[in-house]
Length: 92
Image (tube, rainbow, N blue to C red; front, side, top):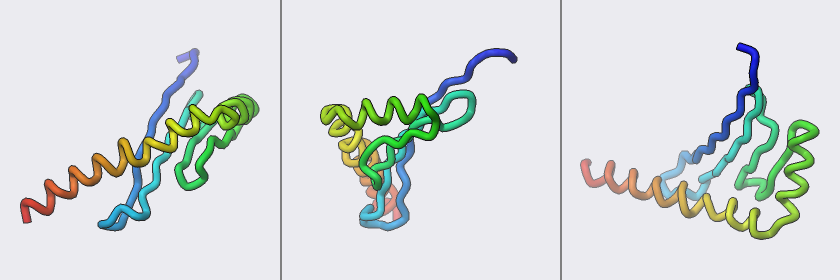
């Protein structure tokens, strides 16, 4: 249909048992195209469109926003992965 589509999704990716390779990705999507992304490996926002570059520049210049986004790796990703891993290893 004619309209706009906006979504935001984030995910945690790892393949090692010790979670040392854990990566947190936070995507902002407009009309099915990622226009800005935070990747914990990069440590800051990257814009992929004119609007995304503008927002990335603004968000990267705010230490509070960056600190909060960087903390998600520990707060969300590693915390939940540890819970899942303990559940699986306790069963074996």
